[in-house]
Length: 398
Image 1 (cartoon, one colour):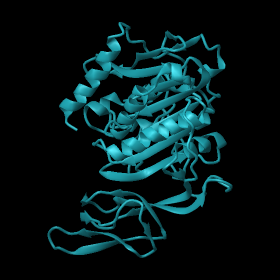
Image 2 (spheres, rainbow, N blue to C red; image 1 turned 45 degrees about the horizontal axis):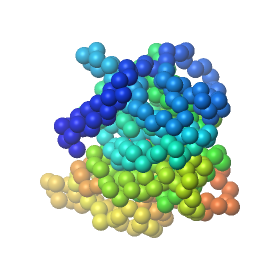
Image 3 (cartoon, rainbow, N blue to C red; image 1 turned 180 degrees about the vertical axis):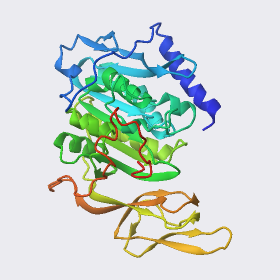
Image 4 (tube, one colour; image 1 turned 180 degrees about the horizontal axis):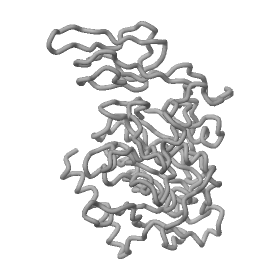
């Protein structure tokens, strides 16, 4: 995607919002949370005629574009995130759709646009709060990161007095996410990798597992997420949460977008928020996953495809030295299914080339306790404001 096109998308979103004639509300300046997060306050628990979002009263049947001022640019101008609000005519849950936490992951942005475009307030119950581009700084630069090279998805719920990433995370959390009963966080693969459509969630939480199963058509990874990820912070605050991963960054992929739109709509139907009859799914749940890393630098090639089953010792790809022409094998360390992989590119030793799903079980009627080998953060406080060091994105590149 060119920068010109990215700017056009941003201008379109922001321009539409200003057409309502509303000034951009600021994120509430509240104290940083201490200790364990309290259960989220939800709009669904209030009277149905008293919804206040970003300082604006949203009446039943409203469909509006609001602004959330998340930060400032280097020039001091405001960075304002569009928030798309669709409020049904009758009471129901409040669902958050979040995309673009990584600014180069475009499929989720289009999924949100298509879903919101198709929502008619008089035909839904409850409310949908949608943030199509959470990391506007990264989106404008076609970058995964914020301008300070931090990964926004390692800083939730954030604090209002921390680093830039922590402040932006807190603004999103306080202005939008804390109002929701459920969060659907939309992503793609990272760093020239592609992901088989999959839903990641804490399967030990029945409500989150129900969301993941309702999304349908995608396999489920039992993974609560690293410290600081949105789904982990939401789950800790009592909000059911899933992460949908599909496809590659820096491109719009029609098939992955169509699956995502169908999945979100099916979740809304399963929650009773639409008149559609929800489809029933029984996806496979992977209790463990494993990254396969290359041991040599050079040019990485593979003929493998997403979704293939492999056995221990199978050839996954090769790495060729461009000078000596020496070729090294990349082999599967265990039996599993390819759920993510790098596209051919130049790599260095340690690069995560393949992601294998291991030990799949049926979603229905199975004991889905938290897996023994969750991705482990380098430090329990790695996402907190008092720890300003960066995490290695290759530690668990999701």
